[in-house]
Length: 292
Image (tube, rainbow, N blue to C red):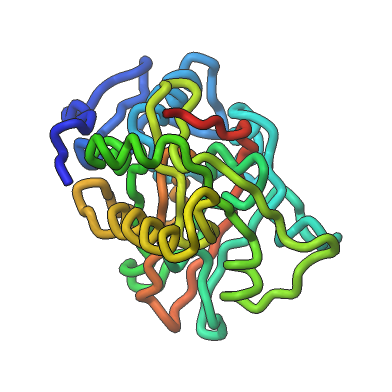
């Protein structure tokens, strides 16, 4: 693994509008955004946020005392809101809100291993926004780790990039929702889709390694044992290369927006039996296109 081909970002704070300041978290991924009220965004500030999201993949907005309606309105500026498979057959839920919560009664927490959100959908979310209202008592624990899958692709060898370029992979909802969480499938079953192993972020053209441990079950063009070995190698490349990653520490009323096409993330469950909760809104993405 070599970091020589990875795009590194300017580490100094950068002003992108009259008030908005971007403070990179690492040279590769993540930025803290200051000087913005997400409930009162003008067009210029929103465009600055969009640009920052393409550059840094993960944006952290602190002290956001916004309503759920404002949370959804901010997300809608990026596109149509996504409906999570958990909510599609539940008439009692807000279909556009995924409740993120854990406490002393939880057997699992959302996102407790490396993954890309709902990659089993034909059009996976292009981005997700999590607003935490309650963080673990005492102010520590419950961090989220993020990895750049753009940088993960960049750090592969040339022969590996060429090998992966024409491959596709199956992403299946049952692998997580039923096999791991023992949830009853909805009518018609969980979503299932086939996506390119290598795709791109449409706005930038940057190539992305698009397989994840939660949902990807096999590479279509390989025998099962070959597929298992290649997937495990790719997952470990993303999960164990710290130079690709950043770690976000939450505070109450923090909103984090991540580009779901260009990242994977993992919630650290180190706060049991304390509570952590909030709401996540996601935006429907485009169909993924193969890039060789």
